[in-house]
Length: 58
Image (cartoon, rainbow, N blue to C red; front, top):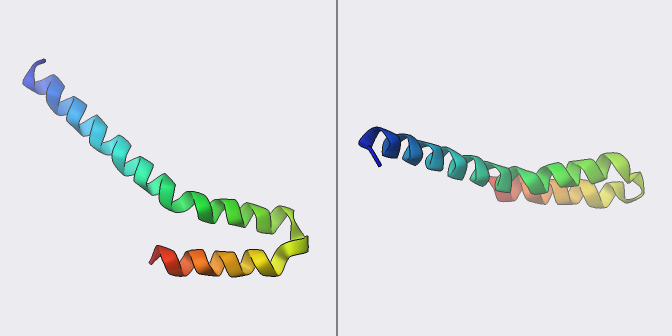
């Protein structure tokens, strides 16, 4: 593989890894936000979980 192609492959690999890490951090929060919006019966529980996730993400 040429140096130019290897550089592009390394860059693409890095971008994919960074994006995957970002998704892993945001997924639990977005799932809890969705539950908060769609299942209001447990609103207090969802708010508490969102707060816990907010503290954990920092």
